Every structure is written in structure tokens, then in C-alpha cells.
Image (tube, helix red, strand yellow):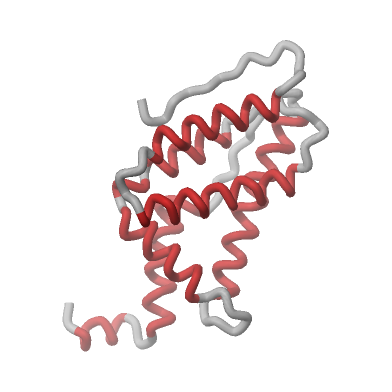
Length: 167
């Protein structure tokens, strides 16, 4: 596409970047209403990570846009902050559902754990972008297993359902 053609469809850089984020959100990010009963949402996170290799440029684009829009008056700041809030809620709700069903310890703060999960994902994403040969699928599966073990430690009758998304 020529620069003129691009400007016809996207008169500003901000509109172009929002369109690119729309595509990414449609494919992968927008939380889906799932009636979780246990820690299945962790499997969804592993599945997302396993899809990174299919579209590494989307992962890189999002990371770059996130860093470029950290300032208070950055053009995409509000959108990225809203996305963060939606993902945080998705993960915290997953933990709350697991607690309600008795498949996660009740002494875990869902909001703090959700922040921890997002921090892990951001760190793994950056590491993988720097070194694409990292076995992120294996790291993700091991991380999920450790999260399940930590969130279920001491529960009676817990049977871990540790499916492996990349096998």
C-alpha cells in the first residue's frame, strides 16, 4: 500500500495504531466471559503465550506501543490502561471463581495475584522478544503448574488438572 493509500484509510498515526490494536484485541486479548469454576484461566494464559510464535510482530508491536505510551498525555495511554484493567479483572475474577468453588486457597488476594500474573507476562514477553529462542511454551507450562501448586497448597481433595497447551 502506498503512503497516500494508508493516509486515506488512516488520516493520523493514532488512528492507524488503534486499528492495529483492534486487530490484536480481536485475535487474542479481549477478555471472554467464561464461567470458570477452577483455575482453568491459567490454561488460557498458557495458550495465549503459545500463540506468540504465530505472530511475533503483534507481540513486539504491543510491547513497543505500551512503552511509548506510558506518559500521562500519551495518545494511546487511556486505551492501554483500559486494556490493563480488563485483563486484571479477568485474572482476578478467575481467582475469585476458583476460591468460590474451593479449588483455590481463600487467603490469596485475587487483585494482587492478578498484578503478579500480568508482571510475569510482561517480563516473559520482553525476554522472548530479546531472545526468541527461549522455550516460552515450556516456561509458561511450568509457571502454570507452579501457580496451581501455590494456589492449591493445603486444600483437601484437590486434583490438579494440568493440561499442557503446547503438547
